[in-house]
Length: 88
Image (tube, rainbow, N blue to C red):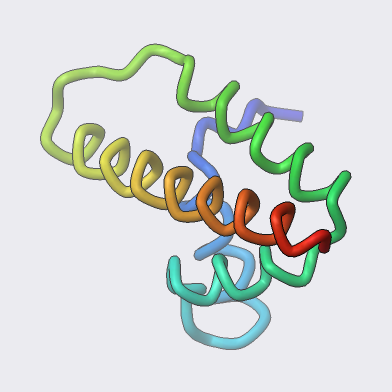
């Protein structure tokens, strides 16, 4: 099986486009993330950190996708901290 070189957002968009006919927005990803339990949120954030730790090239497309990933990771991290403070 070939290696999937797409980032998290690209994979989520592809899957939801195939299922529902439209891509999943980052707002919707954040809403779904809020429904995860503590362990699943931590695992998702760790996967994001691993993905963000990889190399990037300097093409405009790659940089744009990287900015989207960093923004989404920040939003998910903030949400995770808020849910932890609320003991959820």
